[in-house]
Length: 428
Ligand code: S3P
Image 1 (spheres, helix red, strand yellow):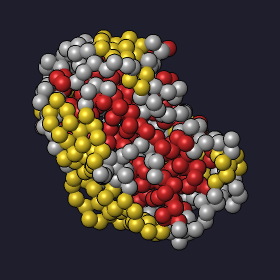
Image 2 (cartoon, rainbow, N blue to C red):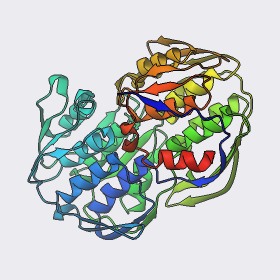
Image 3 (cartoon, protein in one colour):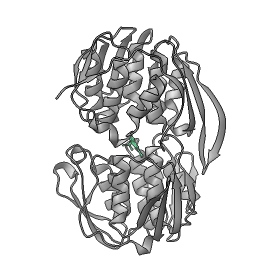
Image 4 (spheres, helix red, strand yellow):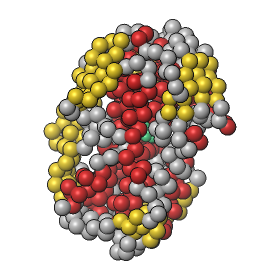
């Protein structure tokens, strides 16, 4: 099926607040389910991926209900979790899968986990191998240590481990396993990745210490329930930020936005490209920096994106690539080989989509090279059933001079169900 995207060259204009950050939402559900007592969560992201995490805990006996705008989670704590009577289905959610595998490995019961056709192809050896070093019993039914996975939960022991991939999901899986182990665990990262797990573990009262890139967690079985507000998702905001920069006349304000330094790589890149990024009303909510961001249309220049910046903007690379097609000069993205193992091979998807739309873009092993500024034409493109590719295509269609047809848009509900509502609000 082909869906014709509305060409909409009207400027993006106005002030919006976004639904909660996806990474923080997963962690909030996990920690609230592990804490003894009642946790209330405001501005939780109500997307498919987050519902997978919610469902997993419901199947383990946690009470999770929405009351008005607030999610109320009542749990009897770690020791109160029950063996799930059916396999846990994680759909498309890599975060649910990796974080939950870490946790389930250390719980005193057995479980089976699986996912959709994308998730069952994604690498799980990155969590399976270190968890086995902690004593976990995991057996994969997939080829190459992929899902489905059977987990025989048992008492794990702490360990010291340097994570060979730059992945917050792996780090978080090992920290959750460490929480349940019988001695301290220290994980060391090669580069700083998003640190929401560390921040939230601290907020819930766990014994966790970060020293440079090494994080040590000591086991505990009593976490403290509390109230949380989840800041707006900067990965979702990036579509409006780039939209505003490339559609003439645009001026957008985004309130209550998560501005955790481990996630704001895109803002550093924008500044390097010459953009004026205004941040105001900065506060801290449960250890997470939040604020209001204002951005306007303006011409930009190309840049190089590499090194420690990559993990701080990994999910924003599809939309940054679109931006680079509209910047003067050659933008180089390197060291982003992790894109090859996301919901789809994003290097291939980005390059195929943008070249079909008339951009000058070449793939490399670990990134891409984009020559701008090119006007975008139009054409028939695939979203690869990947939410971030689909949303990038919709934003691209705002500036194409011909029609864009896309095969599918349904994946957008994985991370941003309100996307079209917010687009309408900003363009009407
Ligand atoms: C996430 C970590 C990143 C990111 C993903 C969410 C998380 O994945 O791409 O969308 O919430 O921890 P990796 O850990 O695989 O880099």
